[in-house]
Amino acid sequence: MDSLEYRKTIPVYGEYDVIVAGAGAAGICAAVAAARQGARVCLVERYGVLGGNLTVGFVGPILGMVSKGTMRDELMALLGVPENDMLGWVGVAHDFEKAKRVIADFVDIDNLTVLMQSPAVDVIKEGNRVKGLLISGNDGLKAIYGKVVIDSTGDGDISFLAGAETMKGRSDGLCQPVSLEFTIGNVDEARAVVCIGDVDDVKLGDEPFLEYCRRCAENGELPPELAAVRLHRTVTPGQRQVNTTQLNRIDGTDTASLFRAEAALRRQIGIITDFLRSHLPGYEDCRVISSGATLGVRESRRVRGEYILTREDVVDGARFPDVAVHKAEFIVDIHNPEGAGQAEATIQYCTPYDIPYRCFVPLGIDGLLTAGRCISGTHDAHASYRVMSICMAMGEAAGVAAAICAKQDALPRDLDVSLLQQRLMEKGVDLFSE
Ligand SMILES: Cc1cc2nc3c(=O)[nH]c(=O)nc-3n(C[C@H](O)[C@H](O)[C@H](O)COP(=O)(O)OP(=O)(O)OC[C@H]3O[C@@H](n4cnc5c(N)ncnc54)[C@H](O)[C@@H]3O)c2cc1C
Image (cartoon, rainbow, N blue to C red; front, top):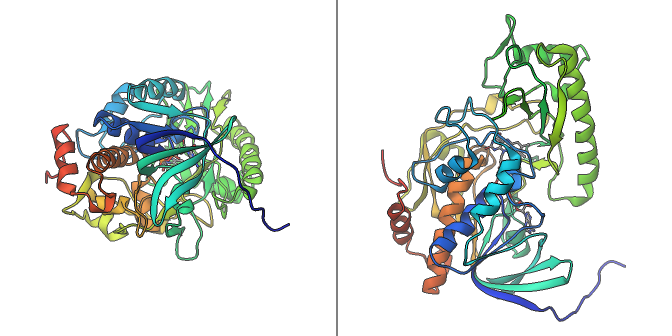
């Protein structure tokens, strides 16, 4: 049988001003920002924990920077993350357990309904306009209606289901590798190296640490794809956040390939821990404390919007009249889609840049906004704006925009962006400073 025609009457669970699909860095900020504007909001999340990569994905530190006054500052304070320097270069990973509690409290506000364990499985559309979502629960399918829907699913699921044009990977379609992060404890702080990646020139003795790891990989002491051993500090002394497992050529939206990828990454956790114990001073007695509940997808669908942010924009510090996020800053950080580590030749420093509102507005589909890593940008630009600080600020801007549209009964495409900017600035967000 090739296909099944399925008909069933589906109960309507509720009608909202704004629906936010996906409760990661972008989604939680979008939902809270819209609700603080007075909108009736429904936040739907497929898992039983809120936070996306901030919690379930075990991703830290929270990297990147945006201008002052956004929800990113509020969340960093709530999470208790020390601000080390502007870009989080020497940042420490936050406490994932604390994040679960903080985020649950953050979204627990009156006009915000949170539906967990409720994956969005389809969109309700009239013509080209998204009117709501079908969500699945243990009581079956439910329909929810919203004047504006925000796609903050990371993978752009909602936009894809709505028929929006999506892009994936670089020109040959290959995406950045998937990884499964984990935390180790029992590390001797006084002797143990910290390494955040290829831009870090940390040494082991006289030798650059990552060169040492590459030499071990050449000698067969470490699998070649694991040669970039990234070991971040966490807020707890004696721990390291390990961002080293990696699998190439995986499409994070192809569910059929996810189990084997996850199993392989979990095997790598053992291999890396053995390597740390046997090779690195200070790691002799380290042990795995915990790992992400699911593998992490760095890159999948990017939804084509009214503007596509480019490498030149992020490197040259582009400014746009319809700025929604200002002074976004992080390197173009492309983890090698074909080999180990970062694709070195492509790493480039950025000048703080604007993300224009048009990147959130999918071409040809109405009633829909995007926020987070699925917004409209090239493979290269995405490698900069995908980090969590920037995703939080995007979510906030999209949430305020959606609330204004819902109140005015306007389509996101027709929003007077100066009104969005005014609301953000009233709240203290810097959008225009040099
Ligand atoms: C291995 C790895 C390491 C990284 N390292 C760093 C780092 O050190 N620092 C940094 O700042 N960034 C890092 N990043 C990037 C960053 O974590 C992500 O780009 C960022 O979290 C994206 O935020 P988001 O809100 O768009 O998506 P996510 O955080 O992925 O959140 C999406 C949410 O949507 C939910 N969802 C998905 N589909 C549906 C659906 N159909 N229905 C309902 N809910 C749905 C998901 O469960 C999830 O909660 C890393 C990413 C990976 C994968």
